[in-house]
Amino acid sequence: MQFQIPIQMNSPEVPVSYHDRILLVGSCFTEHIGNALEEMKFPVLQNPHGILFDPESVCESLIAYADNRKYTTEDLFELNEVWHSWHHHSRFSNTDRDAAVQGINASVQAAHDFLKTATCVIITLGSSFTYRLTEQADRASLPEGAGVANCHRAPAQWFSKQMHSTERIHAMLKDCCDRLLAFNPGLRFIITVSPVRHIRDGVVANNRSKARLIEAVHQLVETDKRYHYFPAYELVVDVLRDYRFYDIDLVHPNFAATSFVLEKFTEACMDKATSELMEEIRKIVISRKHKPFQAETQTHRNFLATQLQRATALQQQYPFIDLSEEIIFFQRSN
Image 1 (spheres, rainbow, N blue to C red):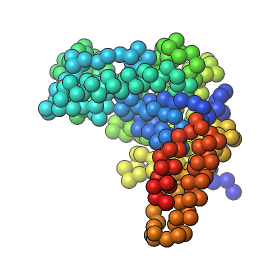
Image 2: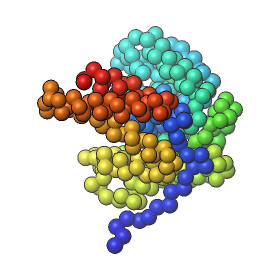
Image 3: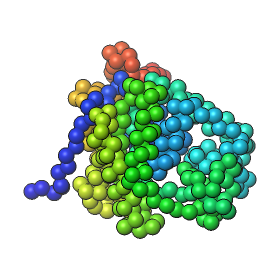
Image 4: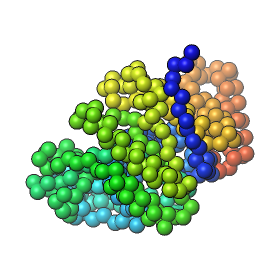
């Protein structure tokens, strides 16, 4: 019997490998992918602006990295004794205005440097909705009507909410990717839509929002082999299709669902050699996390010696992978 709808997953023209340097930008689901890749020792940089949901904020952040934009204190606004940026996640907010700008610019500089030699950009879009400043907002250097990446729990009357059209989303993505390719012609893109449901305005509005993102991305993907669509949204919504795969809020996919999506990402976007190497690294990473009941036993010391030997051999065979933390851990613990 068949208990799941089969889904066709195309592979990118060039699969993801350990030789890639991967920049990930977008919604919180981006970080599920990024954290998994980072744990498996892929060279990654995640969300230098923090978590972003709408395509306008995602595209503006990527262009800022290419341009190495320098933010100033004039780009910040104060709310509840904390300085914030309309362009950034609240993890960059600070009670010290200068410290906030320094943190923002340090992150942009790191992203700019990383992007110079990056080979793959993974973009996860969360919502077609955008929040725009009204005349009542503390706009800092932004004009009325400007879009914001994060509302920072500011008063509701500071914002109006709009939904980008499919045409607008496609145009923003196309312009953004063109500018990134002008900066680094070696880039390729994997774009996906987050399966996290934004249901504050209801299920119907969420589905309209996701549909616009999906159609806009497909319009882009159909034009160039450097763009690839990975169906994270469809894997959760159409293949898993059950609330047992969601967290208690019934909105965010749970561990089982995200693990399933990551498994499919490996199958679709990586070649056999990369996935096999990743499994070898996974064994070492899991061994690193092992907590023994009796750490002083010879059995455990033998276990550590075996893992040290495996990690050292793998590091020597694949010098572009950094297993130094695991090697040091096994050496110190033995």
